[in-house]
Image (tube, rainbow, N blue to C red; front, side, top):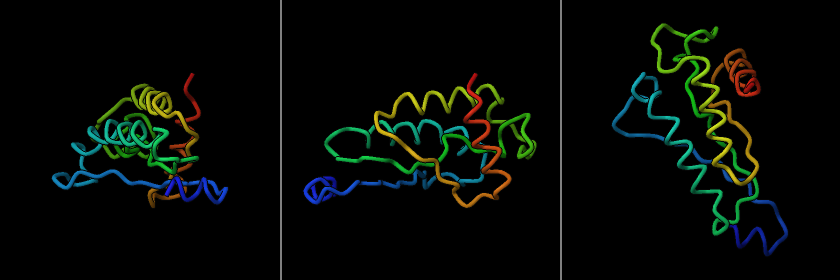
Length: 121
């Protein structure tokens, strides 16, 4: 696909979703595993051999499990600072630009997610 896009002078936007068939994506266990799955996919698909120009990726955390946020549902997978650190680590593995996907969450939750991602200080 990357070669086809290059040959036709078109940008290659790649959208991928990570998953683990053995876990419920709404579980705390999945929330704990998600950051590494997202980062590994970002690490892989930023390799030049794929020809990706821009990645469309999931956020590396699950907001209902971020303690101290409005979206928090009571079971902690990460603190707010740990979530910020995971955003920073995910950003560091990408060698190509990327766009975060909403993954179908509410606008309020996605907005809070992006605010957390932007607040890396």
